[in-house]
Length: 187
Length: 165
Image 1 (spheres, rainbow over the protein chains, first blue to last red):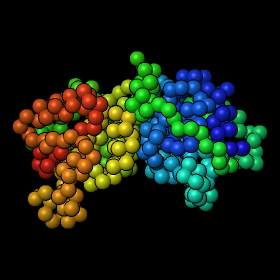
Image 2 (image 1 turned 90 degrees about the vertical axis):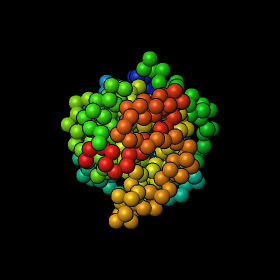
Image 3 (image 1 turned 90 degrees about the horizontal axis):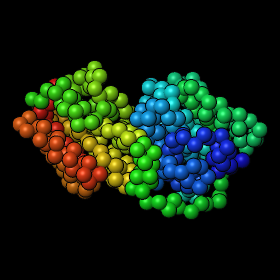
Image 4 (image 1 turned 60 degrees about the vertical axis):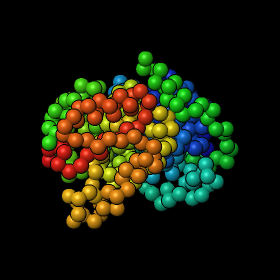
């Protein structure tokens, strides 16, 4: 299973009022293409989707905030996980699509394959962490996504996925337009 | 010296209810008061760019905050400024200690950034003002007005001894 299939699996599970922050490159294009709009689609600021999602979760404590990030972004922003783990916002969920590569820039290897995600993240103080290899095990993904969305605490789901060579078009909205459309949710 | 409690109240009155950042000794008292404050919630960040990311996310949820750091952090936040805050036209207030001037003569680690701080802000197209005790409220008013009117990043530079320490 590829990362975009994990994103598409969320289509039927989301209620429609979730706030989603997606990492720059392929992941934000997939979230734009397959999930309800508008959301926070990052075009740059690599490494910062967790920080942005955390700020959003603090600002909107009654909404569910989901960060969807690739492994390259996740690792660059790893220290934000320590910040988030310290504060434990109960409305923040983090979904990592780990294909072990910088897929947007041509599939260069990341160092992700060397890491034990559950131990690493639980060692930061986050209790609800799950890891699933959806290349081998496609059966349990839906259940894990349902658990992630239903959890009443800060939670992380790490998914090992195949690299996706299919590229989506760039997001057609200009960044200020992304911001303005997203802010309309709170009018 | 500017009283930290008064500054916090003033910023809170202008609609800011969260602060995040990386400390500077120039802001020692301000951080003590922020940690006690029931008006402004303070979130310690691990890096300055993370703090800017948190502040941008907070704004995208419809609320306002500010970011606090040393000028050394200006070197760290180049990408988050240009590819998030400025790109998305997100209002952002940076409260930055101006290290590397004469009082820091024995801190060589601050001197090179001290020399180029204003050049760096100009290069990033970030408008800035230097804060003085006299008229500090007017400086903050002008910065917030520019930030909100133009949906821009603004920076307030704070030299040693301007804030209570």
